[in-house]
Amino acid sequence: MKTAAAQAQQQRCFSSRLQDTNLAYLKSSQGNISGKPSCQVGFPLLEHFSMMAFTGAIDALVTANPLSSRPLYRFKTLGLDGPAVASDLGINISVDTSLASQMIGELDMLIVCGGFRSNLQPTAKLLHRLRQIAAQQVTLGGLWNGSYILARAGLLDGYQCTIHPENRAGLEICPRVRPPLPYVVDRNRISCAGHDAGSESPFVY
View 1 (spheres, rainbow, N blue to C red):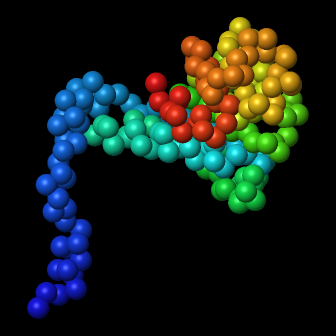
View 2 (tube, one colour):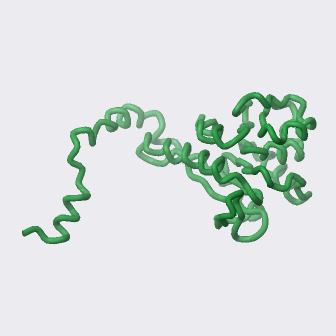
View 3 (cartoon, helix red, strand yellow):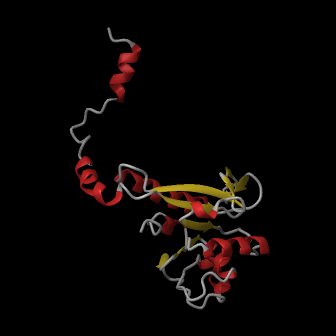
């Protein structure tokens, strides 16, 4: 009779003949990407941010990681005030650190995640911090209406962008807005109009 440990060990073993089918692709691609450092992505979460947009973006990054022998993307959640941020679902998400204390040199990309009820009147402190980060050539982006915060900081001047339909009227400060599109990638600026766009992997480029 098999012991419980032996049964558990057997359950953890793959028996499918398809178990190694991804290895051929992985081995052929390792020469191109396995030696590159992981892209570090920070997600500042506005109060009442869209949980669906945020998790869609995270899923795109996490799903890309198995394509390499080492993680292609790593991410951090960043708060503006306090150790947790309330989502649009009323679920509090604990953040890894604050945007103010995050080391800029550790970031390759910063994606501001907003939502339908997020406050779009950014503080002078937030705008100043975003400008500091932009000055270090970090790729910037916005989810849902996060683009509006970047526009208020003057960080979308000369860039094309998009925003959630509910906030189109308020983005006249960014004359090159392209609201019909679900997402826009313009050089080192990325914007997504809603939860569906976040899952379409505009950050994985």
